[in-house]
Image 1 (cartoon, helix red, strand yellow):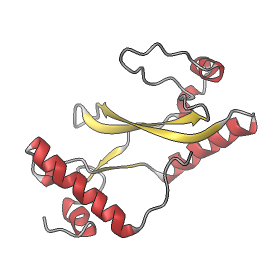
Image 2 (tube, one colour):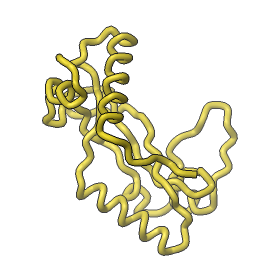
Image 3 (cartoon, one colour):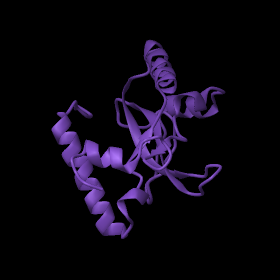
Image 4 (cartoon, one colour):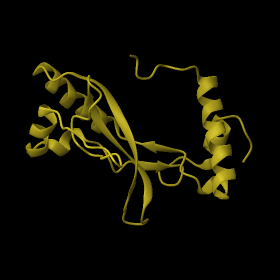
Length: 151
């Protein structure tokens, strides 16, 4: 199964515009108050992928990355939207156990149990992203311009 694909710029713009419009209607917030995306540094992403490649070299069957929605406390904002990225095994289980679905009885994969006790467990989980446009040095006007709308 393919988990994601490259999409044309026009489709990306359309999808973001739909999200923004729906969130404005749902939340009653002004567009400039919405978190539309998350910025993650390339150095961190490179290290994340290197960690995954190291696991794969050790025959851990990681075939994708799962991105969870989250909320984090930052220095200036409490409960700001965030994302958490975690490697996913080919059987669909998170390599690092970060989420329990309500009502589920999770059976952890052996690799995930080992990972929980590993001293490097946090090195292959990404969080504390920078929400956009609120904090990440992009203005709502830039986002709106990029998706083809007026502020």
